[in-house]
Image (cartoon, rainbow, N blue to C red):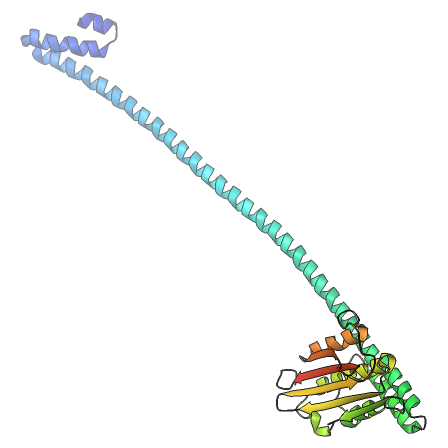
Length: 301
């Protein structure tokens, strides 16, 4: 068996044969055991070598798998980062366009508001100012030329400085009452009631000027449309409010909700800008009643 195993180069069979020979030939025990031990050691060495090689191969495979997984993770993170960057760029571009559009709209709105504000000032200062002077001359044929020249100069100064802030004028109270009285004539009497200079105390000049334009607008509409013979402008003031009540006995407005013209809308817009309130109602005895209420303790004063 040992000879065949040696010829076939089968170490395992050689060990099996030597195990039996050691038992069967006690007299040659040492020689056979040494041979057995040598072959067995070679087998173990060879097998350990193969195990080491397999372990190294398995380690290399596992290391490559780990590296591949790490690479996949890095690639995934990079893809996530690129996607986030792309979304951020898209979002940034969208926000930029939206913000640019909003700024353009705000600028356009600002231009329109400026144009509207300028148009309103031109209407108040120039158009209504000229009409007021025409009425004044018409109702007072013997009016002093110096007064007319002063009014023209005043209107010129206002129109020249139309884009600037208002500067308080010392004779405003007198100018206001003279404006009301100028609309009174033999055919159409306008009576100021309860008016005194102290009415303007604790009221800012901005509100004073707005009320001047509002009352003048009302009187111009009276002159153009009311056909009234008598009108009054009554002033009342307490610690909280200033009230101006206009009343006439003209034709009035049949349907206030449908027949409000540009003048009335302009007046309502003015009242809103100074935080006040205005109401239009029919006079029970015929004509129109307009009630203006201005809170005094507002931020506008």
